[in-house]
Image (cartoon, rainbow, N blue to C red; front, top):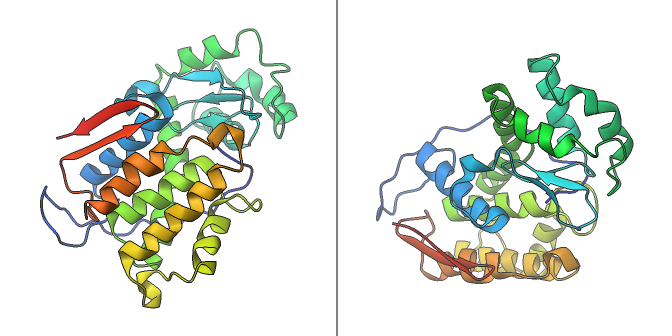
Length: 261
């Protein structure tokens, strides 16, 4: 669920391994925590914890962004799908999706399927069985969404839960394009008087303010106005004091119950 331009990626920082129940500082780059983050996003985006089963997911969800597909919801109307297919071409010339690049360039910024139908969805699912395409999806997920979100969160001094909260916001709202993007959410939280830990604020209060601003933003768009991924997931973890995403994690999103024991 994306928008047009994105934050630039920066260098990954070192991870700190945690085990369930510990209270030491955690980094979402830790493989175990990153996998939890992927499961949490998949629960909201695909109603499943099995995020690796989503490489072949593709449909038009009528949100004005054309086709939504893959492990993070790359969209034909917002540029990130175009970038992904370009990368796949560079990594594997002559692949089954390369022929759609001219059409993806034309429909970028629109909800149109012109030049994609009738075979694009089937060809996407075929490509999803290719490990090279799977790797390209993970590369673009990290470059465009995960790494920028985690780095911004660490600059603000928040731990693994806050890093995930930032990541989920960038997944849905993108950044660098307008009044309803990630940076606008963060600025709205600052305008409320809250401050992140790096500016001397309380982490829990700051994350509540950020989530308040995110809920307001979601309600401005009909496709996002259902806010349970915040209300009964992220805010629940925050109220439980799980600032490092300590397991077990239990949550509801869009009417479904999930658990990571």
